[in-house]
Length: 313
Ligand SMILES: [Zn+2]
Image (cartoon, rainbow, N blue to C red; front, side, top):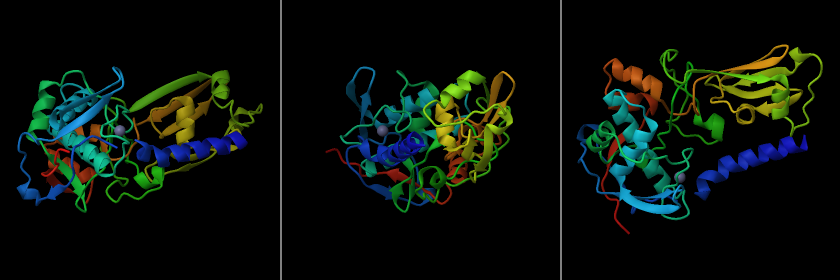
């Protein structure tokens, strides 16, 4: 139980402190709010960022739109509807500005942790360059500040409420219905483990796996978005995020089925579940929605703004 409590403490501290540990790389600040109808990309936001490349252990300066195009190329597979690419370009740019405005990095750069900032492709794809250029400088804002426009690959039925996961209310990151994504990539994953490997995953905890396998999994509580919030395993209550980490699951929407000699875990959705589901963004674009409609749906109450006054230090 002691280890269990310690681990929750560590996870809690990680969630709370992680954003504070790490100050990004845009030179300057200030975002100009404009009416939606006035938001027109300039084609080049003229803003530069500094990206820390952990592979070569070096800081690299680049234009914001080059950064967005390369992050987009890494994140999005080929043949994605163009309006989805543009929506994701605006979301990436918004997150970058949010990290900067909230001083989330110690020094003046964007980190290479994909859980916090973005991984970059070595070279940007042509469609991603075009999407970045056509939306250059456009971001989402909430009350005049850059919005934390997080996204994930896939959700089952609903996205997740940010507050449920991180304990902090962000009014535009709420649980929202998604389209039927069952034919989309990353929707369902099956993990099969031997009974011994399953038990081994919980070896750091005082879990009791008795002879009656049916009693290994107890009561489960779900989040607003239908993900596992708390589940009882071997008599101990675990956070869904802890179980997902221990078992290497891609989402907090999972079910565990314990058979005679193997444990089958079905996982639905892929990623944090917070913000825009890229699969639904693809389906919306295929229905003819443009990038603004997609973003307005996933980040309700935000406004479109253009970065105007990021000054070089
Ligand atoms: Zn970062």
